[in-house]
Image (cartoon, one colour):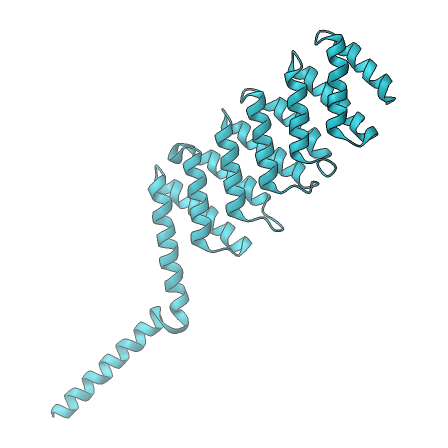
Length: 258
């Protein structure tokens, strides 16, 4: 009798284990792992959000990116949260989603998600406006594509120009950056920065400095030396004074035969 009872218990336990295997083990284990990964992701996203609804939408955005780019879910979540923290946490949900979308559009080739997020945050830190930071990211991404400079180098260069001009002069920084990146395969970013800085310090207005930079780039194309062309122009400007920029430009054009 005891043997029959033990046999019945053994069959019962075996059946229960088999049922458990169908639920969370064996080939079905992937579903359980996915559940716990997604639950953890949802918890992390909820911690920074003001509402569960926003956290749910963020989870959908993150999962779509994870599947599209074949990335680790936690890696994508961590980068999304890092971005959201830089953009104001739960108060910056809309801007975070917009920024994340811009970053995903730029994610190709050898670029990585964490590199792009890091550079976006650097642009945010350098700006007075989150909207300007988004525009700056678009400009950097657009111009670096045709340059030998890396994305990080281009971001650092842009921020150095913004710091030189002041964070209330984002439009001017974009103008100078665009001009410089166009010739960044010919001259180093350091040479271009130093040239513009010298021209800016010698002028009364940013507009004049940018115009002089354009002219110096033409001169550099003629003589093959950006530093020399910059110093030559400054010598001519010194002869006329910074109130006679137009006359100085005309003389430089004449002397350089451009």
